[in-house]
Length: 239
Length: 239
Image (cartoon, rainbow over all chains, first blue to last red; front, side):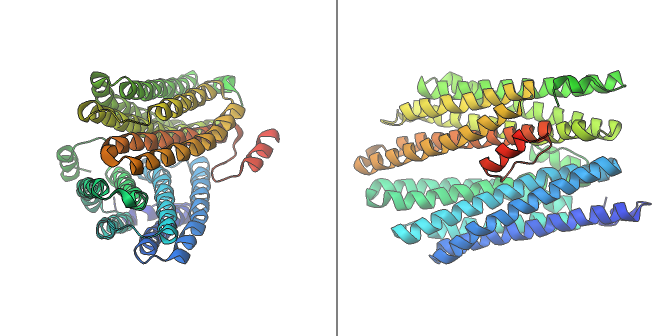
């Protein structure tokens, strides 16, 4: 299935509705991606105003989720979609939940950024935050890009990246824990960074979930809770 | 809308399918509730074998999610449900994602429980874990009970309980952070309990999400991102 397949309906209106859902999904994704980037910048640059802006923007994302869900229900009730259309509706319905939760995590990171501005910097953890933060942002970007191009192979690539992030998250956490034991004066500050790293790790999980939904949408295969080997076979086999 | 409304279809088969979805959802919920309970017990009783059992059981929950989703897609494609039937399908589709993630959190708690068995107990945090753990389990139980009885008012009650848990989680976290600063020898162990508390707080969020979906299913009102005052009005107004 590729993007052009959504132009196959006799009803021009139905085509337009599906295209509208795609557009809104990508717009929501774009805002979520920006929120994550801004939250990380707020932290790294100790920019309290930017942190507050990220927190305020979160309700825009919530509203987008609600609107898209309304549209999906309307399409399900009126158009009774089947096959690939139905899979797209379901995939978007599940994915916007993940997008919204990425938005929540971005708002949380912003809160910790604000706390670090007010209570003082952490003596450790910024290098790790920048590094894992960049990877996670790239994951979101690649997921949305894969969605725009209906690219299941790229979605699978994103899924694999999540495993790297989990490893780096664990390494970073262990280093920060060791540091806290050696110098317990800054435990509160270091913990703020630890929470941020955990938020980033969650964002990676959510991006992975969206990629799984994308593979379902394009290939019709449910690849949740499935090993990489089995997914690889499914992707190389007949769609 | 009440439970009996699902018996209104001319097609006996369609009735049976919707009832089957309800039954499977409640079975999945029951297992998830048990997993959370067992994970907390594994931690409090330092029962390493129980912790391992919880981790192993997680894939049963994953399988249940996959099966229910398959059934939902089948119903959407064949029966083209409308109105309250469609809302039920959507609500279950979103809620099983939350149930599955509660299952993930239970498995994580079990992992920390195992670590605490192997690396030694935390000197603090068990009272808080027991207390918040009990509340969270009750939330899951009440949510499932509200689902079984199509009780939107009880679902709203669960939503409110989540706010209490957030407050208690913050208090407990602060106490443990203070303790770590005063006695940094046990930072690693205390952090294991801190992560558990965070898992419990997340479980509360997921139970709240399911309650929101239940209100949507019963009342047709999307109450996500909505203040308690507005929800109260929607619930007391005409369904």
